[in-house]
Length: 309
Image (cartoon, rainbow, N blue to C red; front, side, top):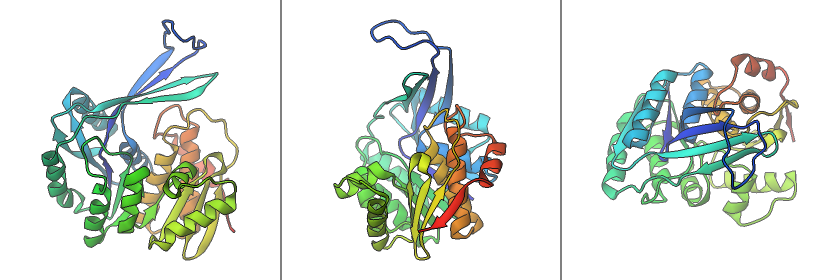
């Protein structure tokens, strides 16, 4: 089983626009969609689409939290969230023909020390039956920045494979505990090392620096260029075909979901990278976040190429 952790879950609202956006006026939507969101929740949805047994966990609160869990029930995703006194945030994604995707992300409610401790006390039991644990996204206000590192340490001591997908200080603290996989993008690597990336060689160089910390697999998502994997076997580049992009939100989460499934199924390195790149590309072809047509994934698996650099 795969357990996905989302400490800053959200109700995701996608607003689809046909009319050109005019600032300072009333705009009417063509359609809208509300889904259970947050990076780890998207990971859970994708892993389930890939046929894995999944459990979603993290923090939820208030009426928004109740709706989020009801939406997960509708999606058939098993969940075990710790409930907090604050309200689960909302995140809005506006999709229009001129600008593409524009996101407005609420910060989330503030978490107390007692609520953080309650989650950490329940965490070992929540992940007990899982082979793979994914930890994704930001943390809410009030939570200690080393929480991901502590969660990784606990999961590793229990014999679990762990994937970390975060940014900023939680990434910096988390990699010290050496998860199995880290999945940064270019921006997150630049932020981590306080540098600017100008070439693929720069990506490789800094991915290797992350691996040198003691992390077996470093997967760098590269948008339409696919993904780079740095590991003991070498450096590999997975390249997807060109597709008609509908919505890029959730592509990284889809990659993490596929990587978790690949870890659970013990895929070889090249097969894992191909699977991850195909899932991310399939998400880009869908208007829904952390979702895709399984037929698209099947077709893309035949078209993604993986080469050793």
